Image 1: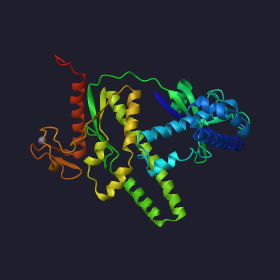
Image 2 (image 1 turned 45 degrees about the vertical axis):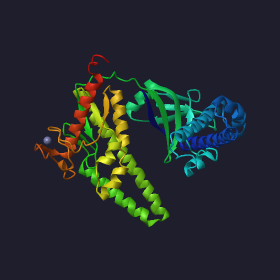
Image 3 (image 1 turned 90 degrees about the vertical axis):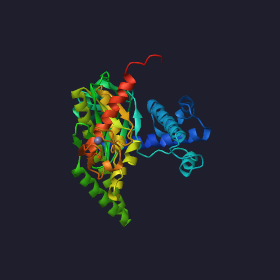
Image 4 (image 1 turned 60 degrees about the vertical axis):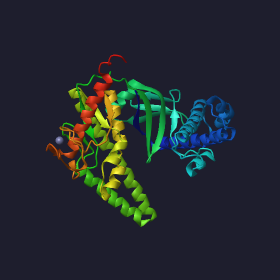
Length: 385
Ligand SMILES: [Zn+2]
């Protein structure tokens, strides 16, 4: 499977200046190629290259290989835009966003990421340095750092393009790696995962991930951000943006930890992971007003992606099940009613009396649905079909 691994570069001030000049030159060149692609309606990489290759080299100081990469970057950007439009992400024909996107060439940020290939970027793993092309000549011995696992992945599995990225004043390389997967194991059972507001994830064995403390953290941040936004001054807006960024980073970290834990438990116990189909989450829970903001801002989709990705790497099967009534159905007698769930936390079955924490009960329902779905999909084929 493809994964993207990031390392941080530690360039000297002079080297950093050369990198910055390189991104600027490449993105101005990309703008030129983009304008030509837009005016001539050229979609193919070869054709666009014929039209702009000489100019990119002569006018922007790009070498042969950087010019080729820049053309590809432009062609890819238009392909992505067409895919977004095709998928309806920018609205129907005539929608303002869509008209805006279609009425002018794509423009690249001055420090947008630039793709490199092995001819213009080489790795010295033992020394933890790279050597790469810049408009100021080849830079050698630029140090990089990263987590040991990431460094190992890059050393052993790197394949294809690497992007030079400038973000928040720091320099990174993001490398595409092709990581071997473990074969999918036949699960002995399932862990049902209920994703909710207070507990982001509750497993069918009762363990839950990130409860009230995180909830408080998120409420506090949401309040602080609302307060800053209400001020409408430039510095308040800037601080609100920075806060939003920090929250997003924190959320990504939490999602990473939760998914790591769930996948580790599943792998250790030979079980698969059952998730509710995501679109169910918002309909099912009826958040109180102050929770609504927190819920819509929590990246549940990212949590699911993390779980799927880690599970795939470790050969753990993942199944999405129908989320309807998982919070109102009694897993023992099947009685389904809204008043089985009188409050967010409690589940007392009105018919048979089974009682427990509501999140846990929902997790059990998710697990049970996965059990029957798996048997249906993998059981013996009925005769006559
Ligand atoms: Zn019951």
